[in-house]
Amino acid sequence: MHNAIKKYAPILFLSTATVSGLNYFEYQAIIQISQAQTGTIPTNLTSEIIITIALHLIALSVLPLALSAKNRTLTAYVALIILGGIYITYMTGINAAGPAITIIAFCYLAFYGYSKAKSIYSYYRTK
Image 1 (cartoon, helix red, strand yellow):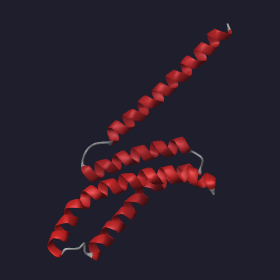
Image 2 (cartoon, rainbow, N blue to C red):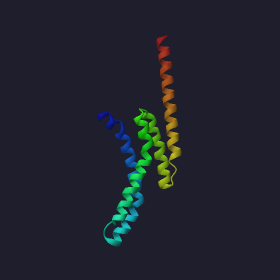
Image 3 (cartoon, one colour):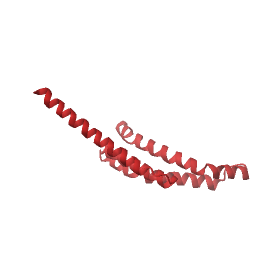
């Protein structure tokens, strides 16, 4: 049970934070208008917000959770970052998928360069 929480909780936390934050800003004006008109938030608006957040959370985290279940943790986080960038683009219209893919590519190149430098260093150290 502890291993499952360690494996799935960060992915669920990151997806929930992304979806909740973006949907908060999306529905903020609608909530304020309905509060000004009626004094409370209508139940149909509350149910719409909860259903929207649940569906978006499922859509955003299914692939990373499936990859994490197959013990592909790094691939799961990469998929979460790319899907998060696509989701931000979908919700706000600001292109975040391109920079997310670029950051992942640069991190991969940096790791590759580090591993090559480490192997070269160890090669010349043994000589």
